[in-house]
Structures are given as structure tokens and as C-alpha cells.
Image 1 (cartoon, one colour):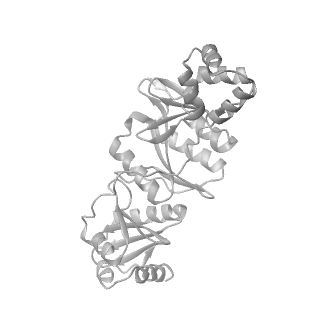
Image 2 (cartoon, rainbow, N blue to C red):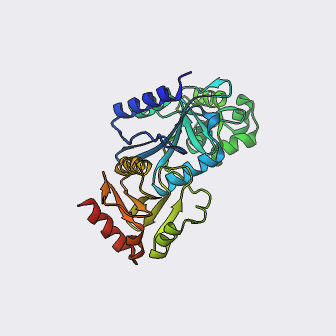
Image 3 (tube, rainbow, N blue to C red):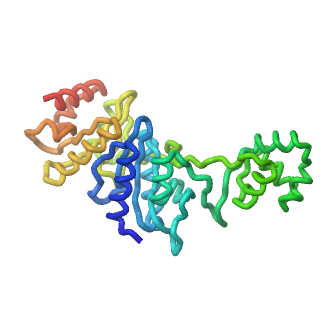
Length: 309
């Protein structure tokens, strides 16, 4: 099994070959994701683990929350689960995050070959086009009972395939395609944007609360290289709160790299004084400057002013 460092290098290489721009790797701990990548409107937040069982629910929830508020798709890339290697061409799920092995990721991004199979409790499953299946069955005069008998399932199951788009096993799907001599299996798109997740949690930091008072929506984070996503209509800011230090400078550089890929702004609110206006594209705003701001527009103007100095 590859160690995480080598796996991450291979993931970055696949992304480069596929024409993605990528952020710097997130080396700061704790980290809910390892890499951000974008190609056009497809924006990925990627977690990389050799063994996907290393992802816990708390971290997964944060990744999904970040993905939702950054309009990204969360993805976990790994090699194995328990004592089994992940299969090529299959999508797995860890706490709601689509999970692929390196080869499947390459197939998707380099060859536009989406997986046909997903793993769930009890084995591998596929999604079939129930509407198309019903059209074919009726066109050929095959009754529910006759098809059910040929497949070794109940009439009710056939009805669920057709009406409710119920998923099925790989064996049944292959039999259906053989019977109708048509493709019925639908690909699984692992890159759908993050969906609704749990509440964003309370804002406890006093400086972040000030941003709430100004009129921003504030989504606090626990395991990201920034303390919150600060949002208003048309503006998304990766926001950190820190005293001036060497570790703050590292964090600001990483935030700059992430914001370039995420198409956001990045800001560190400095608890104290600083002579610097900007670290790369991350604006540095002193706490006292923030206290003099009363509107989101003024905050946006201050960030732009510092970035242009």
C-alpha cells in the first residue's frame, strides 16, 4: 500500500494531467482536507488517506460543510478499507463523501469514464434507468410477472425498478441489459456539489462575532487552515484570526493559495499590530481596523485597498 505522501503526489499528478489548477497542500494540522483543485466550474475539496477508515464523522462533516459553503464537491481518495482494496470503477462513501481509488479518479478525470458501480452495505450496486426499462418491457410485450420470473425476483421488485428507480445488484443489472439488449446502467457522478449538511454551529470567537454584527454570514471551522468562511451576497472570504507570528505567515500563504483556486478572498484579522498589508493575496486587517467598520461593503473595500497596495 502506498503511504499518504506518495498517494498525494499521484493525485496531484492526475489533477495536473487533467488540466486542474491546484492549491498548495495543506500541511498545517488539524486539517479536514488536503488539497483544493479546480477546472472551470468543477471545484474539488480533496481528502487523501491510504486507509479510508481513518476518516471520522467529525472531519467528514466539516469537509461537507466547507464544500457546501464554497460551492465545491467533496472527494476522498484512498486505497483500502479494512482489509480490502478499493475496486477500480466503483464509488464508495464515507459519511456521505464520495470515495474513489487513484485509478478510478484518473478514469473519471482523464477519460471521462464515470464509475458504473457504487459500494453500499452488502456489496456493489448499480443505478438503472427505470423509465427506459419500462418502455422497453412494454414495447416487447413482456409482463411484470414474466420478467420477474426470468430474473428470480418479485413483481414488486420489478415495479420498484421501473417506478422508484430502485438500485439493484450488478448481476441483476447485467441480466436486464442482456434481456433487452440495451444499456440500462446509469453512471454514478462522484463530483456532484456538496448537499445540505448539519447546522454550521455557534460563533464563539469575539472577532468573528464582530463580522456577524457587520452583516456577514459566518461559518466557523475547527479543522481548516482558516477559522471561518465569511460570506455575504457576491463575496466569500476565507477568514483567520491570529496574533502576528511565523505560523500566521505560513497560514496566510496557504490561505492565499486556497483562495486563488476557490475564487474567494482571504483575510487574516490580526489580534494586535502589523506593518504588513498583505501576505501574497491574503489581506491583513488589524483588530482595531475591524472595529471601525460598520458595513460589509466597507470591509470589502478595505480588503481590496490592502491587496492593491
